[in-house]
Image (spheres, rainbow, N blue to C red):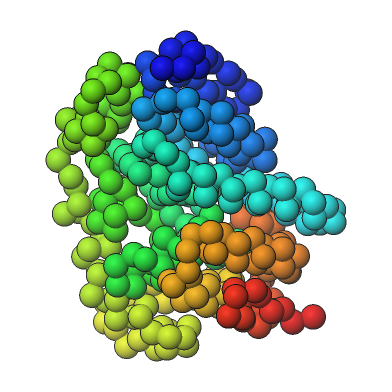
Amino acid sequence: MSDLVATATVQNTGTVRTEIRGGIGVITLDRVTALNALTTEMVEAIDAALAEWENTGLRAVVLDSASPKAFCAGGDIRAVQENSLAGDREASERFFSTEYRLNARIAGYPVPFISLIDGICMGGGMGLSVHGAFRVVSRNATLSMPETRIGFFPDIGASYFLSRLPGALGVYLGLTGARMSAADALYTGLATHFIDSESIQLVPATLADHPHRPVEEILRALGSPSPVADSALAEHRGQIDWCFSADTLAEIDERLAATAGDWAATTRETLSRLSPQSLQLTLELLAWGKQRTLRECLDAELALTRGVIRTPDFIEGIRAALVDKDRNPQWAASRFLGLDGDGRPRWMH
């Protein structure tokens, strides 16, 4: 065992804490006042810790949060908007490229990567968790990819993992930004284990105290009965698959209009309030990503960010959601013309 693993080393950047406990690497998100919204510096700190630990003999890595409300509310997208308005493309490029590099590292990490989701987990928070081997949720967990609501699109590898969900669940979640409960996350497979909020905090210490027990066995021992029977996604699965398996946004709308009940009416109304450009490129990106690798999907998403963050819808979406907070964005006509076979976007000039 290396000295790094044998010795408890603790580092604190002010927003990310890293330490080693009995052969278990623990990374704690600690930007509590901002619900752990990710900055470039936070992403770099996590990536650096994982790179340092990669070949040191650790048995597992745990990612958790110091916030009582959130695992991670996503990327600090308001900062990206400010960069766009200031014409600072390099700052935005650094954020997204670093974030996507971290997503890929987590996906290929050589030891089990375990995320403890005991609160809000959105956007970039999904990128920190869903690519790892174990995604533990509590009853407090709320997961979503809400990017179409701010004139953006589901990124952080979403074109890979959403496109691989059963039926049309990924298209539905990607287009609408619907929030998933713990039961929904377990139903889709985006979460792997359910542990109550009191016990979820015991995971790092229990792993450290039982070096010869498999991670899966420990998580099951700490777990509670699965609430998957309470999943709203399961309840509406037939309608979701029918409506969102359509090839075009117009056909999705037609199927929703022809479907009886409150769920279809509410979903249709939700889509009518979202960025047409975001909906268009999300639908095409998910179809493209279904047959690509994670690396290819991340590369395509990075190329898309360069154009999207300069469009009127992105600037307006952030204004309405995070600056003025009037929740009344005025969307422009879509400037997105489609993806080519390699996932490169074409834009109207």
